Structure formats: C-alpha cells, structure tokens
Length: 278
Image (cartoon, rainbow, N blue to C red; front, side, top):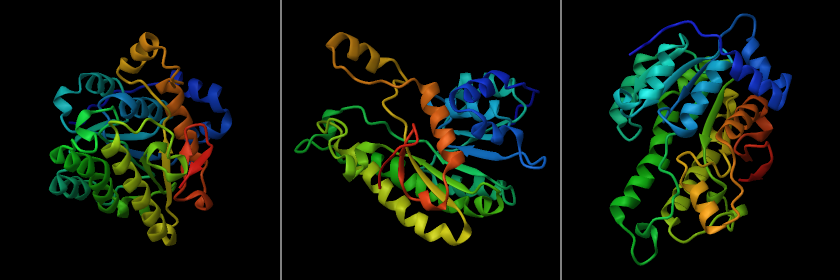
C-alpha cells in the first residue's frame, strides 16, 4: 500500500520555522543528502496523523502505520499527495505482525521510532476502583505497554542503523510520580497505571540501549483535544482546562526529539521542552 506523488511540504516547514527557528529546520535540510526516516504507530488520526503531516513537511521519509489503513481515509488522501509517505498495516498488539513488518524493513535505517499508538485517558467508569473491568485492564496494558515494548525490540536493528537514533514514546505526565496530581484520578486509574508502567519500562530500555548511542525520549503532548469533546466540556462546564493545539503540541515534540542528547535519555519532557519528571 505504497502511494507515491511528489509534495512540497512548504507550509509545514514554515510552521515549524516560525515556532522554533533554525534548530528544527536542520532536520529538513538533511545531513549530506541523507533523508531521515521516521516510523510512527497509530498514524491514522489525532496526534499520529499530525506527526505524519509535520515530518512530511520537513522532508522526511515517513512510514505511517495504522490498525485499519483501509478506513484511514484522511491518511490515504494525504499519502496519495506525498511521495515520501508509506502506509503500513500494523496492530501493535499483534506480535507476529510486528515481527513480520520488522522483517519487511530489515536493513532499512530508521532515525526516529515513534511509539504513538495508545488507548487514550478519557474518564471511564470501568477504571474506577471497585468497578474495574479486567478486560479493559488487559486492553490498556496490551496497547499502552506491551505494544511499544514489542515495537521497540523488533525495530532496534533499524534504529542502530539510523543516524539520529531516537526511540520515542508518547506518554503522559499523569503516569509520572513527580506529577501525581497532574490530572484527575477518578476514572483514569488504568490509563495512568499503564503510562506509569510505560515510563518505567522506557527508563530501563534507555539504560539497555545507551551503548548503541540510542536516545530514549518520553513525551507529554499536553492536553490536546483531538476529537472536540474536551473543548465542548471545557466551555459548557467552565472547567478552565488549558488545552493545547495539536499543531503546537506536535511541533514542540518534534523539536524535543531533534534536540535531546544522551544526557536526556529516559526523561519525560513536556512538549514545550521542559523536563517534567522520570
């Protein structure tokens, strides 16, 4: 499902240049003609799709994965207009499929492996203590924890072959013990637990891959309303939530990915670049 057509990407580059200046543009200019590659999980909508658009604008080769590519109409349309976007089917809970895709890309350098696919943290009665739905528990752990671990292991050889060597996980400050009160706990227990486990796992991964010069980056995207529900609730209930535009969130996270060093490996960053914990 590779759809190729030449694209300019000028608007996205100008957006990032205005937001962060020349540091981020270095990725677009390339290194001695080298075209960097990013693999993004959960690319069909929300943060994942915005990552696809902005990395495409920077001139990167983008491997965009989705559980059901045939239903990802916006992604399909975008890929049809951009020659550097490749769509691949990937359910990160299907371990055999992860291995199959890794084998398909054997020998392909990947500069940024971006674990974005996840179950979001919307409040849910099934996450309340005393009413926990254990099938839901398994879903959170499979998608938010086991999936990123498997993807990271399977594509490790690709990261080693890349130049930038960034292993990234989109997490949440709600999963950081340094920010234990960062978000309401009622109805989000399973989500926060899965993200706390993800953070601890990636800290251990960071220690394991430092000998390969791979930097592990944990990111908090801010409170982004990807489906419009939070905005309506915020206005209707006067919640006073500090919402972040997804374009700003993604531009910020790309800049963090680009500028972090080995000294930053395993830390959790706000999309603004501020370290918010471990």
